[in-house]
Image 1 (spheres, helix red, strand yellow):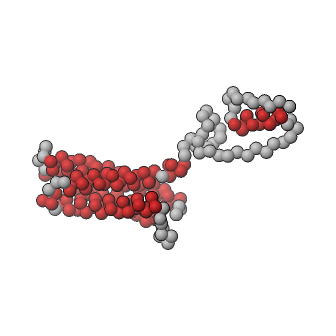
Image 2 (cartoon, one colour):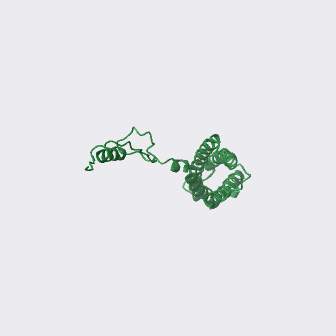
Image 3 (tube, rainbow, N blue to C red):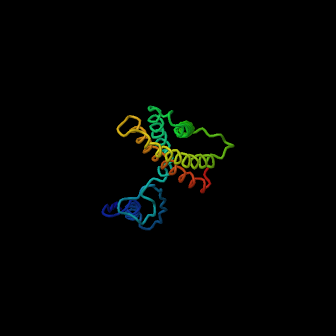
Length: 190
């Protein structure tokens, strides 16, 4: 018997079925399918998502990179000024450097895939991200109130204004990380 392939508007399983039935019309084939994380173009009946679920779950890892880079910008911009003349900047510097170092440490642990077995990492990361979001927001608000003490156009004022902007961005990234950590904690991932 001749093999008959129908390529127009057919998915891979339908093409296989047509080809098999043309070759063996009296047999009963067993068709196994392999699920793909990507949806075939124009075929929405399969129910598979059009995105890769693994990459969505790793958004929190991308946010860690953003937190490290923006956190470095925040405290480097403040450190390049005469911040020590205003005591509230001590709090801002403490929060920014402290959470930058802890985030860098967390990034190294995640990249090395090294986790201590008896520590509930999802809970630890959730608590870390929530406290970082809260304390970074408080530091950003304190810094925003101190920007007016600088002279506009002066180096200190420009650095403090930029640092305030980046501090609020870091606060948002920590809040996003807290959201994804909560979702992971709620699912019970370890």
